[in-house]
Every structure is written in C-alpha cells, then in structure tokens.
Length: 153
Image (cartoon, rainbow, N blue to C red; front, side, top):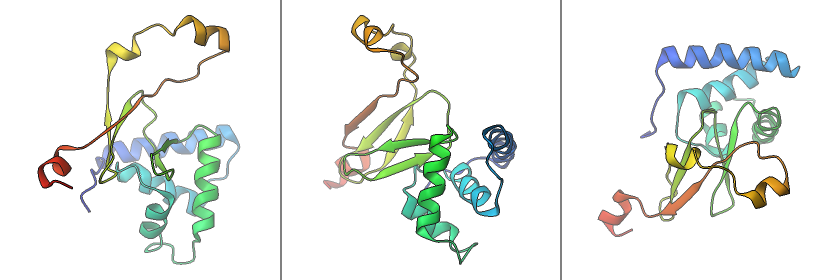
C-alpha cells in the first residue's frame, strides 16, 4: 500500500484519546470499534468504508461491511472522526481531527491534507453569522494531482 503510515507513538496517543472520548460519549470500547479506529489511526489515506472493511477482515474475518458502516456513522455522530465527501459521492473517513483542508484529485481520487492558516484566520462573513453558528470550516479543493498530470491520466 502506498498510504502514509502514522508513527507508533502517535497511534498509541490517538488510541488512548479515542478510549477517553468513547467513555465520555457513552460508547463501549468493543474489539471491532477499536480495530476500526486503529486502522484509521494507522493509515492516513482517507479510506472508504469498503477499504477499511477489506483491511480489517484479515484480523476479524467475521466482521461485516454493515458493521463497519454503522461504526463509522456512530463515530462521526460522536465527533470521533471526520467524513470527507468526494465528487463521486463516496464518503471517505479520517481520524485526524486537527484543523486542516483537503485536496482531491478528480482523476485518481487521491485525497491529501493541507493547512491553510490564512484562510482559517479570516473572519466568517456576516451572511453566515446571520444564518447561525459555525462549528467548523473545511475547504475541499479539486483538481489534478502531479502524478496524474505526468501520466496523462
């Protein structure tokens, strides 16, 4: 796999934090939930539910795709992960809750994180303030990655 791996120390820290957040949210720390989150903490590749399912099945052969979908929805509802909606309408997920934005290649579908501090520092427009409360700001930029541009994909 060509996905970026997280360091073991960082994974241990994320797992400890995840356990605390689950307890605060009243979620049981089941083996399946831990393994789904561990997979997301280890691989920083913004996987879909199907990708997570295929990787976890090697460790938990009895897990179902439905369980992965329900678990991800539960994690998202409790603010434990982020969902990234892509142009092909297939959701991708990440365990990184730090403020950042996404680049999505329209050809290969690769998703990359980036930080844009100047954007994050801008005040919210008045029309948005009138609309209501903003909980987060995330920008998704779409285009063609360098690898696809080089290969003409």
